Image (cartoon, rainbow, N blue to C red; front, side):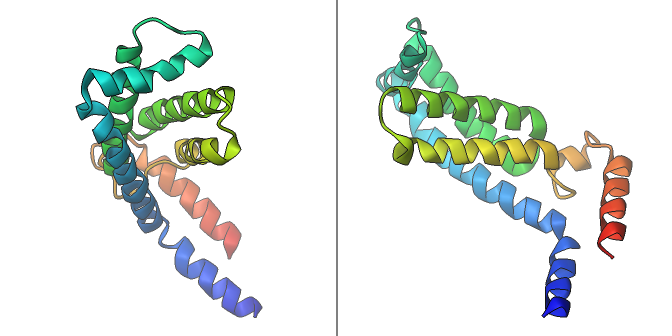
Length: 161
């Protein structure tokens, strides 16, 4: 049994960049899916989404906040999927999900409604530390120190063996 577990771990640990690509594409596309209706919904939708800032005591310009939230979800999802400006985008999406979580909890919607925002926020927090991987625009454009990343991967791989 131990040998099977070791084999499975080695099989997938050597394909870390594929896993990050799948993660980025799945989460990024879903955020584009959720953000698009918020952008094209017009001022009515922007006011609806932006009014969540009122639970935090921010009552001015709700349409602006709604458009900003929708744009962060859509374009953040796009950049996240592409692995472009990955860590700054992850940081923005953490903030977006944090505000969504807090406002849902303060509105009394409970954890059943707010859980998705919290879970997504933790996903982006983890992504912030892990990075986009080799199959990303950040990697191809040289925004990632590939030598430092490969050194980290070699250190991790040798500690597994």
